[in-house]
Structures are given as structure tokens and as C-alpha cells.
Length: 320
Image (cartoon, rainbow, N blue to C red; front, side, top):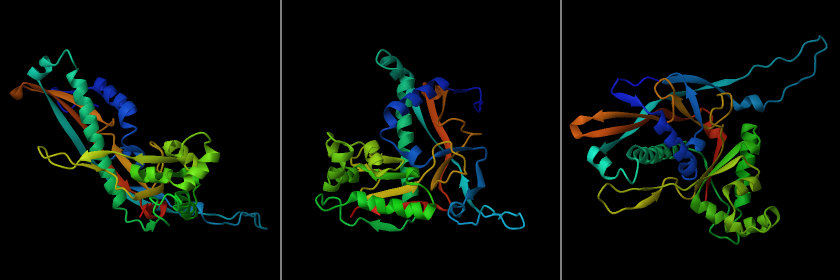
């Protein structure tokens, strides 16, 4: 992709810095790209076909007829829409500050890491808002998980798993659980999980189970542990930390993997318009002599959208 003008330089080297940051730092903190799987699209907005779940649920006669004919079926398709918006941030690197700290850090790499974190945070909040706005039917747990002796988190989750298996015609190995860290901690502290782990993971303290181990215990695809936090106050006001994903609210859903075709069912998708944003993210630099600074720009052109059948492919559990 060519920059808009000769004064703007596309920085592949800084993209590598951002990629390294994603792999080492962001992967454990932000879940937006897994909670809303990425798919690349050639248009900024469009209506696209959705393969309806009925295709995988109907029962047909497969017996060949006496006249030699076979029963003919037709696939059913719905439709969804997306409309990408550009999001971006710029970081100003002052010439004097760059020289002052040159022996301690690489200013452009530091700016890239800060921008990447802030862009991740903005997208994390967009994806969380998308899930909260799906309008899913709420399902309270039978007993609050804070009641460690009597709560049955495995049973509560299995109810959702079996509901989606019936609704979607999918296997539990296709399902993802999005769970805030407070609820994950409470689940691991329950007697039910402790008893189960004695046989599944002997020798491991239940409270020390990882999200991967708990997902294997449930026989599902993955657990996305939501634990990102942000300062909810304005600049200059005393810090007040808040979790991005609301404690007590969990989502179980059929989700595709990044890059999967639209034929693969997924409750939500993140559409990346590659004509304007061929990478996630695009990183550019340019000079602003009016303030004696170099500017690092990070941007992406996406839409985080629910599919037409999201309400049938997702299940909300409330721990209350």
C-alpha cells in the first residue's frame, strides 16, 4: 500500500515491533481479536451472505427413489451487513526529548508500543460493547458462584453448551466461553471444580488451573479470560480503574477462527477493509516541523458486527 503523500512513510519495521508486542504482551491481556474473529474484506461496506444454522439441523430422506431419483435439497442463506470505520491515534516525538533520552530508549519503538496498547484498549471496549448490545436472553446461574460449597459452575456452563449444541447443530468443540477474571476465580474456588480437578488434573491446586485447562475440562474450544482494565477518569483526575468486561456476565458462543471464510458460522465478526488498511495495524510516520517533531501514526479500518443469527449462536450466563 502506498502512503497518501511523499511526506508519509509506511513503516514495516515498526509493524514488526507492534507484532512482537502483540505476541508477548497483548495476547494475555486483550481478547478482542478472538472474541470477534477477524476476516479481511475488499469493500468498505457490503451485504454478505450467511449460511443459516438450519442447514445443519434438518433431517432429510437419503433413500434413493424407485425411479432412480435422489431427494434434492437447497441451502438456506441469510444476510448480514458491515460498514468499516477508521480508527487511529498519533504519537508526537519531540526532537529535544528524543535526543535527551536517546541513550535509554528508541523513541519510535516506545511510541509504537504505547500506541498499540491504546489501540488495543479502544478495540477491546468496542468489542465488549458489541457483545453487551446483542440483547441475549439472560440465564442466571442456579447458585451464585461466590457460594463455593453449593455453586455448580460446571453444570451452569454445560446447560449453555447443550443449549447451543441443539440450537446451532454445532459441537461443543466449536464453542468459546468469554469469562471475566472475577467469575473465573470464583468458579475455580468451588467445591464442584475442586472435585472434578482431582481426577482431571491430579496434583494441581484447583485455584491454579489455567483457562486452557478449564476449557479442556468442559471439552470446549477455548476460554477467553477477560481481565483488561482502564482508567475511567479524565486526564488530571485521580485514577479510577475499571474492568472492560463486566464482572458477572459471561458469553458462550460459536465463534470462527481469524481468517475463516464466511461459510464458517460465527456469532460476531471483525471486518478489516484491506484496501485502506492492509495490515492490522497500519503504521506510518511523517514530519511536523511546526512543532519540531516526528509523528507516528497507527490506524486500522474495521467494523465489529454481529451476524444475523447471533442471538441463536450465543448464550449469556449471569453469575448472580
